[in-house]
Image 1 (cartoon, rainbow, N blue to C red):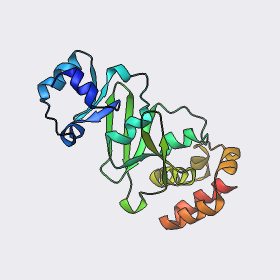
Image 2 (image 1 turned 180 degrees about the vertical axis):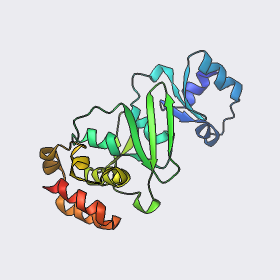
Image 3 (image 1 turned 135 degrees about the vertical axis):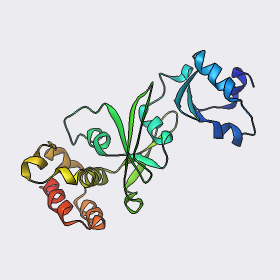
Image 4 (image 1 turned 135 degrees about the horizontal axis):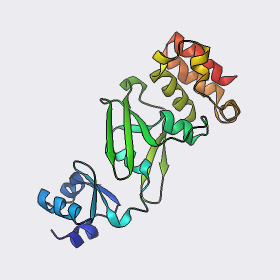
Length: 199
């Protein structure tokens, strides 16, 4: 296969070797390595690539959703997205039912934190010009963050160090949904801190 054939075959900026197999096309590893060296392709991780010609179009959030599946953006990434924390977040932080992993590529730093499979819910699909990505609902983003950082929250100063924007929480969170989601976790310590988010 020639590079031009690949570019005609794959219509999305991001693709995997599996996409080629599903299309009934065989591609040799040396070809992908060569096209990557020539700057035609950007390696995101083994088996997943992006077209360099589409670099400006691709969002890091789209990559986060395909790099390690199943996963959805949550924690600091979602808290920042909803304006719940003042900090800029320089990594794409997701949760996954799989093992905790991190990846680095030309598009940034991607962190995946493990969450129990029975807590892997509470996200929505956001469509983009080139694809889609999954983002935690606001209520689940707060609960995921508190749940996965519970070991570091032992007193009021620890909780306040998160620096939640309470005006934004009040404006965005559905109290009914938040309490409903909280009940699924069944953790007394989590409830103590989570309920302060509804003040």
